[in-house]
Length: 84
Image 1 (cartoon, helix red, strand yellow):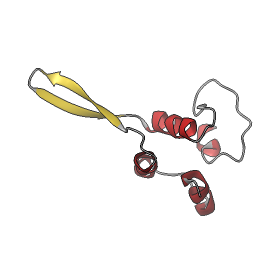
Image 2: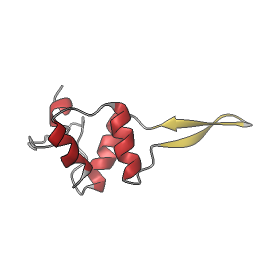
Image 3: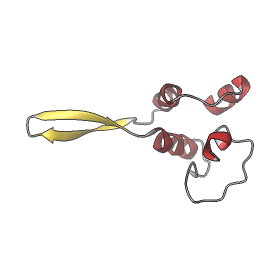
């Protein structure tokens, strides 16, 4: 059972923490290292929106969350939050 189907069973919109957890379990990188100052590196996390798009792509769906792309997938886990 996919992560999306598991959350659909709970019938709630996942929090940012849950989205990060789903992404990590799917092997999706949740951030990258950036140079803040020469000797210091800092981890920058992807936004919740970008992680949701990455999850959509990993599940072979269109990465349309909060984009200008019109989507009629009302059964999508993210549909309600996307339409806000």
